[in-house]
Image (tube, rainbow, N blue to C red; front, top):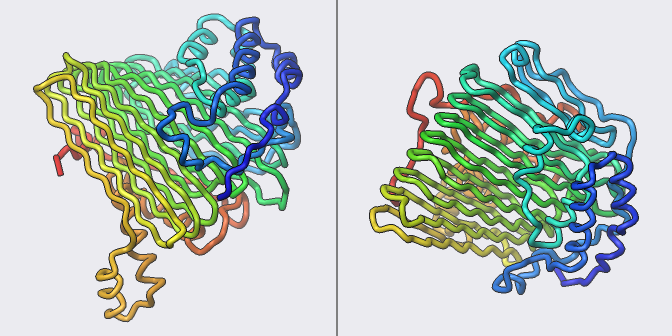
Length: 464
């Protein structure tokens, strides 16, 4: 992973940003925001924190020829899941399917085109959560924003809502920057999946996927948000996720990283409602020259809140991983329970991972702990499995898969490990996950544990 200094000004010009604004008929405020983001894109570093700039895990990124205006035929799709909301982003645009019974309950969904056309309060809510970019890739994502939607579930809708969002990149130099704004009203339940794939067509050049998610949870709302990141090994991705929680609400951020060339994730959650609970669960498998850079921030600002973050990564060849976790407990956040667990397994001498947990505790009446490790496979475990007739490679694979399953088994989704295993197996065997290569690599119907049969959603806050 030799460092390189690409000419960022060649990735995206201001003239192309203005053409995108014209194409989408941006209102003046958004047009100005794009231009300002492009200026920041040229000025900001890839990593704003000087403590981590020396890692260079984003070397080799060169998005020259990036085309946010690209258009083409839609990708083939299987039938939608029954009674679910489906949103598809591809080179043809955004396609939405919202079941009639959800419309009758007051659930609304507006695409970026509709928001820009009609404006009003929905557009203001869509743009309200946006933050000034603090690094080059976040600024790029704002400048090339070309997909998005606003989903609102009204207060009192107790019927669980299933949202399946698919993003499929199918063209060389394609750029899809998706922004989503979601409000889950009081007492509502939402299970959302963000699934990212590419078609493997032998193209040259890197592609960009940018994802921005803003969640607002009302009192007693329950939201599970699962990301499955499985693009080809030339895709550069940047994720930014933010959330605020209402009283007694529960949120689970789940993320499974399998594909991509360079992937950066920034997750900021503020527990503002008393008694709210948040889980941040992430699993990575990196091979070849892949790199993952994940940073989460859990801020406890109310009483009796629980926050838990578990990260597991397995890296081989010359893959790289970084996991930075910050838990901040503010002065009035009494009775807080906070746990950070960051661990990585290295399967080769060329692989590397850094885990950096941070606790900032400004209140005395709390329980907070962290654990972290980076290590190779335990040779004693390998020897034990070999003594039972397994080959060394199969032994290491079983140990690595079990290491990642620690995250899957704690997710509040029934049978998640079994659903994700085929994709993990493909990557472990050196293949890439291709959209529509044989069966579609979609997630099937999912069931959340603990929202109906068991009122208490499973949350493991034991201090280890």
